[in-house]
Length: 311
Image (cartoon, rainbow, N blue to C red; front, side, top):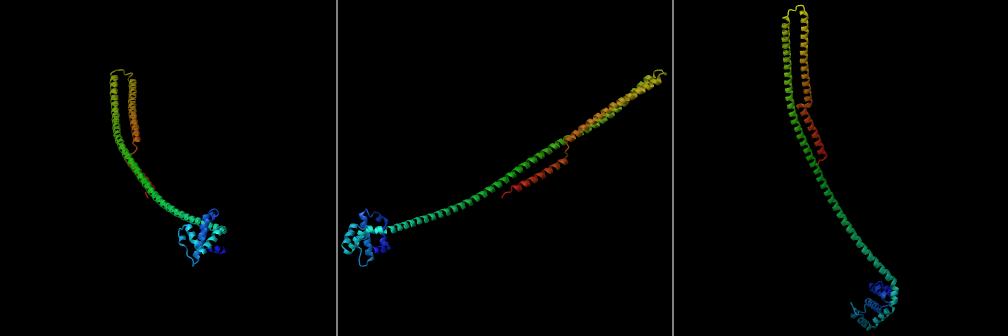
């Protein structure tokens, strides 16, 4: 028995005492026979003077192997002892069997855990590689998107400015044309007003001449009429009255002429002032205003292009 414990250190003696045989050895006669045969074969392997029967090599039939063992008294003695002590042997080796199985199970579990850890590390490395590729691709796509966005903003800004500049230029051209038309009309009206003023002056002079002529004619007629009378006594009085009437007529005619001239001149002055207020922009001031508008537009364009320059 002690020798068997020593032999258990050999792999040949370990196999018969595994859990499969020892767990069923109490209720299964065939397992006791298998344990006894395997231990007998281990004895043959450790003894150089004995050879293993052919019936017990490989996947043998237990009945034929027992017949071969029974033909040798030495082998049969070993078999009988192992068969008789198989229960005790299994009971004796049970703690070591359990420990061995536990160690084997632990090694198996450790092997599985090692493989699992390796697979996890492989998966982690693969996912990290995918994450890096994904980040690189996302950065590339984001850069392209930013370039497209900036270029689009730049082109849209230029188009908007060009449209604005075209509208400003067209509006300014339209304003200049309209101002030119108004200025031409103003010059025409001013020329007509000047001619009208000259005509009024001529009319005033003519009226003054007519008034003077009528006054002289009336004075001569009255004087001739009165001198035909021979009322010497009242002549001086009548002469004084006639002179007073003449002076009054002269004042009335002069007053009408002056009022007419003042009203006409005031009307012309008001009309000229109103027209000049409508056309207060001369060609020189319009050109200066257009140049300042162009300078402001250029500054706005430069600022927009600087803020929306493409990458």
